[in-house]
Length: 131
Image 1 (tube, rainbow, N blue to C red):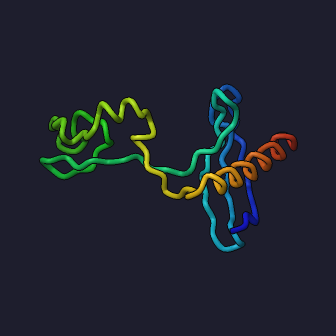
Image 2 (tube, rainbow, N blue to C red):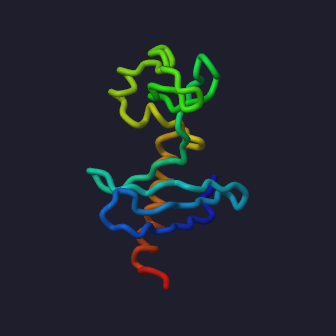
């Protein structure tokens, strides 16, 4: 699989960890949008597009975010069982609250993808803001 295009959109605020979003085209046939470029403690890295994990309310079946204590639909208190593995999820941090929509299977492809995206990010940053 070949990366045929990488488009980077820089974010305005310089003090935030989120630096940009990338859109990557594979083999001129498949696109993945909203790949985040983030400044971490060990430098820049990419985060794949994800969505928040939801759990249904036992009373009304409304889907609430994973660690919710009360239902956003009926207002009822959610049982601890509706918040599975809360201690483990807290230990794992935000990763337990989100599930990737698309992601690389192998470490080598992740490294290739990250390298290409970060190269495009540096090029876009060097261009400066477009007015």
